[in-house]
Length: 128
Image 1 (cartoon, rainbow, N blue to C red):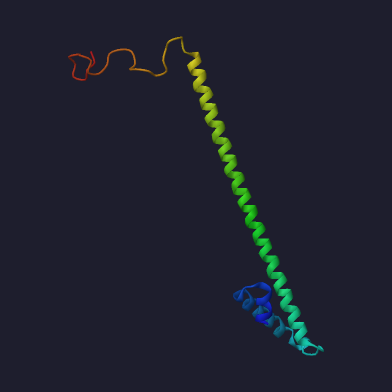
Image 2 (cartoon, one colour; image 1 turned 45 degrees about the horizontal axis):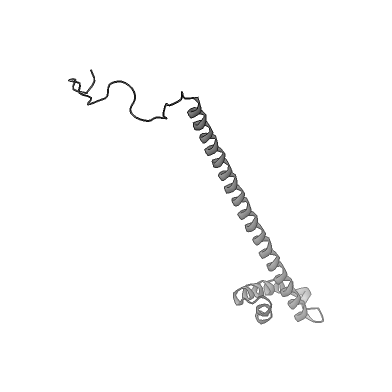
C-alpha cells in the first residue's frame, strides 16, 4: 500500500501517513469489507480516495496562502499610496507656504530677527 501511494505521490512520508489512514478506515469497516469478493481492491480504492483528499487539501491550502499573499500585497500597496498622498500633500502645502511669502523672503533662512544670544550684550544670557 505504501509503495502504491509513494509511486503516486513521490513522498514516502505522505505515503506512509495515507496508508495508515487507509488501514484505519478498513479496520473500522472490516465487518462489511471482509464479506466483499475482493477486499484488497476496496482497500486500494480507499487509498486512492485518501490520496485525492490529500491533494485537494493541499490545493486548498495553497489557494489560501496565495490569497493571503495577495491581500498582504494589496495592504502594502494601499499603505504606499497613502504615504505618497501624504507626502505630496505636504509638498503642496510647503510650496503654497513659499508662494505666500513676500518676494525675496527666504524660507526659514538665517536667525530670527532681534537680539541674538552672545551678541555682545553685557547680560549673562546674552539678552539686553
